[in-house]
Length: 112
Image (tube, rainbow, N blue to C red):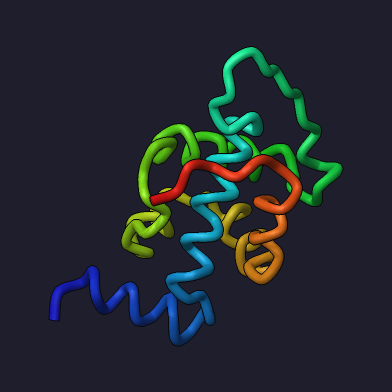
């Protein structure tokens, strides 16, 4: 068994994060990077701490959102996990079941 599938299983079984949580994280990251969801003519500044996202975590998620701005949210979980800082991983674990709320607050991204 290669390291990647093993890492994915460890993340899912030991930490309790499922593929849906990672898809929600990618969608939230895309919105944190661009809260206007690419709508031209709109400029929106957001204080992410008002939404429970510390500045350092928001910075990490902005990078993730920029990298996967036009991607499907279904990226291998071990790839996403490797790009998160320790602080972001802790925040993610604590907020995994709330991430979908970002899509309710901000305009929906064009999904496939």
